[in-house]
Image 1: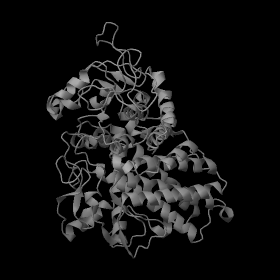
Image 2: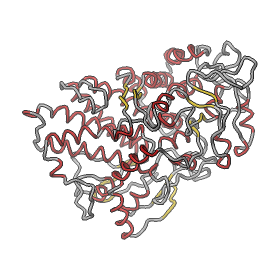
Image 3: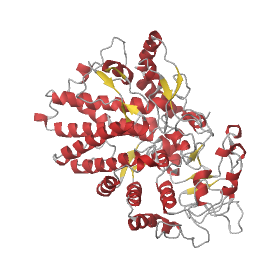
Image 4: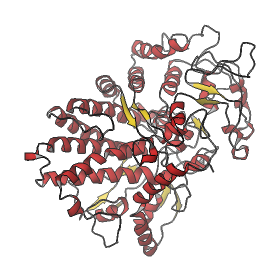
Length: 568
């Protein structure tokens, strides 16, 4: 197990921008804390803006979302941007956690965004605890307190889902005392406890959020509590790193929360060129007709009825090329009546393209004719805009957790009932028990077992995996990867989570480590040191640079929005 990291809290403040830091390194982007927290309206704005970090982690492109979806063998692309080429390569390699790595933001963005939001929420709560009143007589204090704790819960959860370890920071943190990292499961315990605190406080209050806090959603106190309940289901269900871990998950709690929480949340997206935070880079880029996305053959292959996927599997990885397949699932494109693959009829969710858009020298095994068409509207709204309604939490996601919870608890009738609600309308035969899925009306079965060269029909577990893959795509970042790791269906050697970013470890003079790579000792999740720490001078230089990274990332985002992303 990776050893814990311990160092002064003020050093962590230097890395993540924790605003109580007093280390003598000039930061031109950091506002004076006393001035920033002096005005009640400013404190409320500070707290309300923290949810934008939750949004950024789940929906921006400058983070692990694209690469890790590729690592789940759901999305595929060969471009270097967002680390997709490097992290999606097979056989899997050690995650390139290094300060000099060109796409280092893949490791850094979620870490920095999470602690930025936690810092804002914690500073706001500290001001409230010191007697600050927001509104006449503090009439808006309860709303600010609940929303701050809600954001702390969310961001602690996201750190637990993405990283192997992290630091617990809130308004009670003593910045003069040493801080020690805790493993992801303890971070999740903190997150779940903060959700419970949020729910209790929200249900005991009376307020409405301002519409721009969660854009377009002036949630009442009770609705915010319901949203926190759903997030508990999402966080708890996705924590496990392996199938063995998933067996210890409290699936009864997942079932309860996924049933009783909010079922849908849609954000009002805005034109990204207006400098709004409310845009969705994933849905805008990961469309079938986009330059940036195709369906991995391992995903579409579960539905293939032609045998092409099974034949594809018989070839060495480097010799695999895109295949044309046939499907019984109406969510996939249908072949022409004569069986040819000229102009095909697009499916409900997916489309077909005869054009191969990815660079062959980076692996023809990543090429595919199939894409996901359900988010084409984001691409078509206008170049780099992505405005309009943006799904942020869906009823189908919650239904997926209920189906999985029922399955893992042995409640087969509930599992089949939930799965059949989406299977049967797609033209697939209803599943009736835990055994082999029955043949579809068109002959053949869906799904077939993943990675199986024999093309054997799947069982109820395979149907559960398949329906999740079909109904939850780019709702929010990481869901496909988290799902794959807890079902043990990631390609061999895939790292199970992110390490602490190398740039931050260098500042703290800690060993830089990483995960993944076929053949490493133990498992894919075993830390593998890849570089040795630098000296103090270089660490301090890096620290001065790191303090401005959040502002630099925002400037880069604004530039990319106006100029368009460059494919590399």
